Structure formats: C-alpha cells, structure tokens
Image 1 (tube, rainbow, N blue to C red):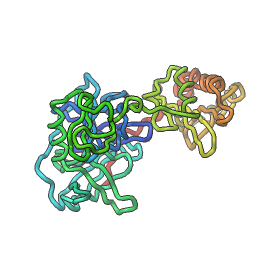
Image 2: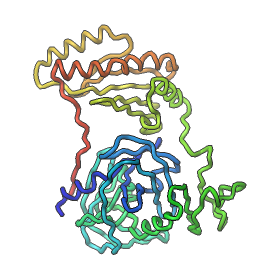
Image 3: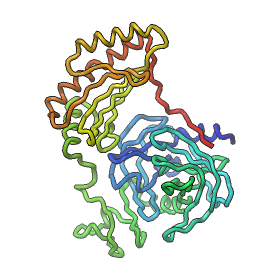
Image 4: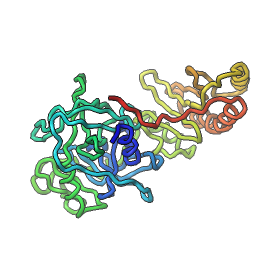
Length: 372
C-alpha cells in the first residue's frame, strides 16, 4: 500500500478531539463501535467535542478512562457509516516501518513516517513502542500503523527537545481494555491505576468516591460537580454573551480563552489575549482577488467609514472583519452590541466580496499532509 493510499484509507476514521484545554486525536474502531484516544487527551472531562471527515463538530460522551495505560474511549456519533480498519495483534519489530496519523498543532490529517526504534521500551512497568516518526502536540491518541494499513498502537507522547523520540501504546493494552469494557458497553467506567479494577457508578463507594472500592488507592473519579468544564472570570462573561447570540458554546469552545464559530464558507474567532488584556472577534472572510484590487480597497474603506463598532483589516491576503475590546471595558451589553454587528453582517459581506468583487474563498486546509 502506498503512502497516499494509507492516508486516504485512514482519513474517514481519524477524528479531532477538543477540550477546554486543547486538542488531540482519536480513531474509530467499527468492531467495537468506539472512538479510541489517550486518557490525557480527554483531560478528565466527561464530555468532549469531536469532528471528522464524515461529520461536523459534535459533543460526545467519554465512556472509559484508563489512566495507567493512558487510554480512553469516546462515544461515536450515530448514523455515520465509518469504514472498517484492521488491528494487527502481532507485535511490531525493531526497524519496522510505521506511520503516525493525527492533528498536530491543528494541522488536520498529518502523517509522519518512521521506523520502530525499539519494539518494547519499558518505562514505569509499562512497555511502549519507541518510534522516530515525528509526534507533536495534537498527535496524541492517533493511530500508529504498519505499511499494510493495520493499527499496531496508539500514539501517546514524545520527549520534548528530543530528536523524533516518540512513543505509542502497544495494541495488546488497547485490546485488553476493549475486551474488558464490552460487558459495560454504554456506561461510564474508570479503571483503577493500581489494581486495574473496573469501577462504575454502581460499584464506586459513594461515601469515599476518591478511593478505589477494591484496593483503596486514590483515584480520579469524576465527581458529578466536576464532570464538565466551568469557565470563570472574563471567559464566563464571554460565553454568556455568545450564548445570548445563539452560539453553541460546547462546539465553539476550542480552548480556555478561545472560541471558533463556523459559518458557511468562513470562520469567526473569539480570543481573549490575557497577556495584553484584549478580547478580539475576527471574521476571517476571504482572500484578496488576483485583480481589481483598487475596487476592493475602495469598498472596504467606505464600509469602515459607516461601521460603528467594527472595521475591516488585512492580514497578508486575508480580509478580516473585526473588533477589539479592552477586558476592563467588557460587559454583556458591550459584547452584545459589538459582536452582534459582526454576526449580523459577516454573511452579507462574505457574499458581496466573493460574488461582486471575485475575492477568493478560504479553503479549509483539511487534506492530508505527508512528512517523511
């Protein structure tokens, strides 16, 4: 199987996972009807937002957490015809060629090829597959494959500052968790990191939920009041305004102080830059055309003279419809007034710029990237 064929095969099952603290990768296994990722990607959340080639952003429940082996299972979206992918139970060998696929730094469907530096690297009583394929933030939870397209592991970590020192969880640990979970399918399960007992709502000690009911080890049982991320301060005020503007916060929230609103053909970004104390809303509408730039500039300048709270600007070739607020001046009334102007007018401006001035739509970079 060629490199390109391998990437195209995996694209439909590889998903991006977003939590209030960042993003990671996961992949769907049809036999088990679960999305697989790392425990540290879910970050203790009972719900995350997932997106993929076959579906848009959607909230999804976390069903299983195994902190010892850094594995987690997520409930997939319904009515999606995911393709099947094979799992290879045979261990990888030193020197074998492997491919890691994921979403590092938000670069969707990036594939990196390398070799198995050491098939079994023992660390803290757990064996890992050591690879020299580049693993970066955002790759965590993605599949590691052999050159036939079989899944052989789950990418989990890289040594910071190391020269392509990456690690993956061997498939045998994943298969063990998958088989154990089948009797509890659909229910939330936490696996004790000490005795490896499967703990559920029915077996947890309600009086002492912070301790394993079997061995007494301290566990990170997600208490009901901590199941979901709760914003505070400016982030809370921002989300209140966005909700009043009919924005789905769970889907829009991409990080603690960053929100992304998808529109038809473009995106709007809300960012609280706490180092500079500014809150920005940027509608990145389109790119400048290849000709007749004077007409576009004239239109943008005329509109800037009429707008009350927002303005047009350029970032290289991108046309941005934006506003900015100092955090000490931000109130629900101010946010509603400023942001409503952008949300009410951005669709209209997008149509005018693309249809009347032949500005270039921004194509989302979601095709595969290949790095040897």
